[in-house]
Structures are given as C-alpha cells and as structure tokens.
Image (tube, rainbow, N blue to C red; front, side, top):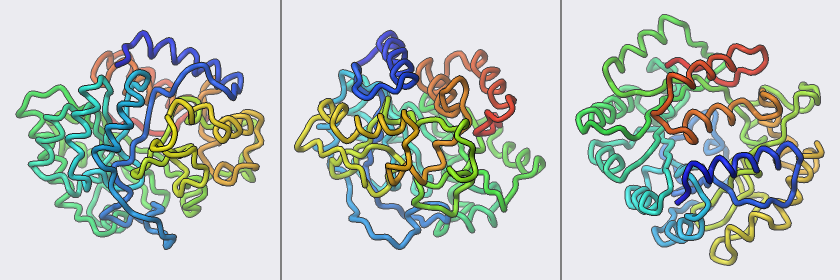
Length: 360
C-alpha cells in the first residue's frame, strides 16, 4: 500500500527521469495495466481486434493476478484492469478488484458496457472499484452501431444508465464514472446532439463526459493515424511517458513494454520467470528509454509508427498524461474537482495543447 506522500515523491523522480532521459531508474512503476483477457465481444472499426492478424486468446487466472498484486503491492498505486479485450468477460473480475483493493491498490476499469448486467454492476461496486470508464463511441444509434459492430446502442445505453442508478441507490461514492466518446473525423458531433445526450444522465452520478482523439495503436491500426514523423516537425516530439512510470502485464503473465504494443513485440519477460522489479530495469526497457530520449524512435518498430509521440505537451510532459493523472489519480477521483476543472479548461484552451474535450 502506498500513500500520497510516496506517490508525490515518486512523481518528482518520474518527472526528473523523464526530463533528463534517464535509462536506469531509482524508483519502481506506480501504475500497471493488467489484462484480464484479450478476448472481446465486439469488432470496433477503429480497433486492432478487427484486424485479421491472429493472436492466442485467453483469460488471466486468479492465481496469476494474485502473483501480479503480490509482486507489486509495495510500489504500485493503481491498476488498470483493461487492455486488449473486454474485461467483463472474465468471471473473476470482481475477485480481482477486491484482492487488489485489499492490498491497498486503486483499481480502474475501461469497458464497452455491453455485458454490464445488473448483477455485474452490483458486484464490481461491492468489490470496491475506484474508477470506471465507459467507451461509448457515438451519441446516436446510427453512429454507435456503425462503429461498435455487434453492439446495440439501446441496450448499452440502458446498461450504463442502470449502473448509474445502482450507484446512486447504494449511495456509493465510488467508482468515479466517465463516459468517453471518440472524436471520429467523418462523424462530427454537433452541440445540439451533445446537449440532448447529456440530458439522458440528468440527476445521475456521472462524473465526466469527454471526447477524446483517435490514435493508431502504434501503427497497428493506421486508419486512425492523424500525425506521424513525416507530417509533424521534430520540435513537437514528446517521448512516450509510459516506460518511465508504468508496465503492462498480459493475461498469460507476459510483460509488455507499453499498452500500445498490441502484439507484445517488445516483451520484457514473464512474471512466472522473473520479477516485475527485475524487468523494470532490464535490458529491453533500458534500451528503449535511451532511444526515445535521444529521439531515435525510428529504431523501435512500434514507436516509429506511433502517433502518440506527437501528442500535445505542456512543459515537456504530454498534456493528456498530466491532466488524467492529476485529476483522476493523485488527488483523488472525487476530491478538489472545483480546483482541477479550471486547470483542465486552461490546458484545453491553450493553442496546440488540447488532446481531449471535457464536456462535464
């Protein structure tokens, strides 16, 4: 279990290491992406899951999950229990949330909400989930169902509203609830439609509604690409922050260098053979940190195609990382929103810094 003082001290180290391009680090990661499954019930048009490239599918066992928690509980602040698949497909998800929470680790979940039954809603709230984000791409049925193939707009919307009603009825402060909508260039969202959509959640405990940009999954889905090294001047380059503060554990215990490395092409090892601590300063990740810090990203295949290296930044730190961590993690999901909301709006209004639009 790590307190806020530890996180603040580690954040200072992370910032210094990131700004100086340090390769070997004197601290451990404070966030883990833990993939409960890489299976998904949808085939969204913007997701690599709709690509023909085959991958072995599976579900993380409760024993593997406990090993991840046991290895990381003395240094990890929070776990995002999502990655390449739909986490609600794993029947052990509530047990995983509860086990992480019992070890002092905050838990996050990103879901498409199509499988969010009344029973599952109650289970994950009871387990102590801290943060949930619903990916709901399209505020009308036509747009939503053309993007999120195999999903029903009506059913998914009902699932989300029911979840919010359950949270309200239980008088639960958690989880912090966000709805994220992708900014699809060929499907613009007009103000009237957005206002009508917002009214669907009136008097419900929805904390945030946000529109976020597409990215190309490190070149694994180039249809989403908006920027790359050919169109963006080098002055806008910002090294990826992930390898200075986080790690990704896949369903089978393999550890990936980055949540954008969809096919684990830069594997750091497996928790069954090595510890997370050892892999954190292992040969592979140390080499990648050095190459990214020295702007030699073209020497790393996934990084050479990744449009996230050109994210808007503020004082050298990618804007989306700065805002999301401050507002959703460090200070607390529900605390000091009155202070942090103006900060979000300030960064959004600064020319060239906006990466997502905060609606609520």
